Image (cartoon, rainbow, N blue to C red; front, side, top):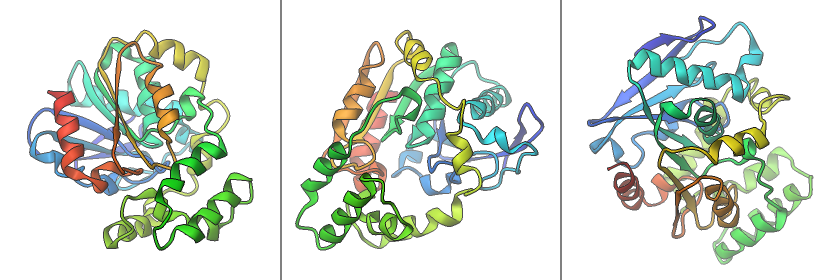
Length: 279
């Protein structure tokens, strides 16, 4: 596995797979190892994926300073990766919580972004409000699935501030278009692949400055694509449309019946959409 040193000396790992121009991929979780991204539905047939294991995850070393897990500080690791790759600009993909790192990087280093691809992005970095009803209305489209009643009841409790580990487990089917063996395997791996110590630090005090980030994104010249899922409980389409509107000219694609992992839900559509954007 290729390695490079962050600015504080932490040894970081990235994984390369596929052919074609490089695409730097920032995983979500937050703070989950990049392995869950896999080949992004077969995108490796067209692009060379560079999956970064964030510090303290996957093959990357644990930093001496745990506050460096904070989202704004992880931006420095992306810039160190660019320098290591010896390229002037990056095509960057951020999934879920990883999109917070991607947009903070774009805000801080706009001239280093060639293209920005946000896949079912988290909205913490830009301060978009997602209401309980946004989430409930989105998942009600899935009424009739065998697990729906229990999952919906658990989601109602979570949105009212009554979350428990059992309720989080109960809503797991909402994260995927099909609650099949592939989805169950991905979901089961989440706990093992995530740095639980780093999770609360990622969004800790000082991690985000939504007003400043929004102002910077409004001036971003690079092309932007935002892929949303029609039934994604984490990023309802209304909020994703608001997110896309923060850029001067962003394309929003809402994947039909898609949830939070669109490359798993419909690989062919995902790969075709990304290829058309990246060129």
